[in-house]
Structure formats: structure tokens, C-alpha cells
Image 1 (cartoon, rainbow, N blue to C red):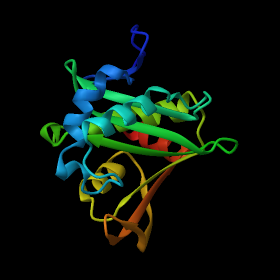
Image 2 (image 1 turned 90 degrees about the horizontal axis):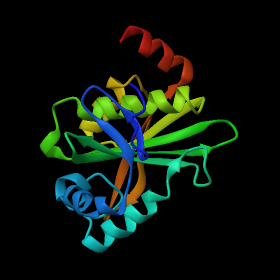
Image 3 (image 1 turned 120 degrees about the horizontal axis):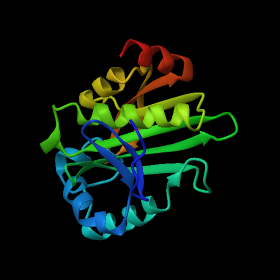
Image 4 (image 1 turned 45 degrees about the vertical axis):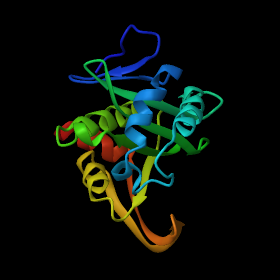
Length: 190
């Protein structure tokens, strides 16, 4: 991985370009987040065009965990096409503890793209920003995200039963975590 020369670039991988959000991403991200099967396990309902504009504007301000927002939001591009995004934010800046979340367009699923993108963001936060720990919390029914968290070296640490009221029902939450030393060991094996 190496930083790209584009001013909005964060990381490039073998197949992906991870860059900061721009207002031009509203249409592409609306196309992803408006899908029922994408929103099913998220806190939000499927996005309307207005929701997409609001969320993208919010993400445009998340340009690095060392900045005022304490967050980084990147678009995942494959061959110039927006296929998803990854968000990472400090939950405890002083102690270098962060949380990460991701969404990938199902049309691009099964190719390892989400794994590649999330792995690149984890490498970035542990190497550049010296994170101590990163967690991912998700709806326990989201088997694909659970598999992804495990695939990037995160450990399943908790299963909270009916802890979250969302979309008219109680849902379970699973929590995955990875420490800096875990990530270093994982990277050595890859």
C-alpha cells in the first residue's frame, strides 16, 4: 500500500483506491445505502436522496482521526466506481481507542474487496495514528460483517443480547476487537 498523489487519496491497494468523500459521491452512495438489503442491519433506514446528501456532507468533514472531527471517512473505489465506504472514529482519543464500520455494495460482494479496504484502514490507523485498539459493533444477524471482522484479524469479544432497540425490534449486538499487537501478528502471517 502506498499513498496516492491525488489530494483526496488516503490509501491505494492492489485493487482499490480509498479516498476522502466529496459531494459528488451523493448519487453513488445513495445507490448503495438506499437498498433494503444494505440498510437491514444498519441503524438507519434505507437512504432517501436527502439522507444521502446529509450523510455525505457529514462524512466530507471526517478527513482524519488526528483532526477536529476525530474521524476518518473514506470511499472505496474499484476501477473508478464507488463500491462502498469505511468510517473510523476515536471513541477515546487520549487512549487511542477507535471504532470502525463499513458498507459494501452487495453487487461487489464475494470478491474480498471489503476485506481489502477494511484491512487497509486498520493498517493506517495502527501505523500512522498509533491506535491501541479498534472495535467493530454490529447487529448479530449480520453474518457477512462478522466473517469480515474475523478475516481482518478481529476477535469476537462479546454478544450482547437484546441490547439495542432498532427499527421496531430488540436486536443483539456482537463486538469484535483488535489490539495493535494483534494486528502486528496478523500482518506478519499475511
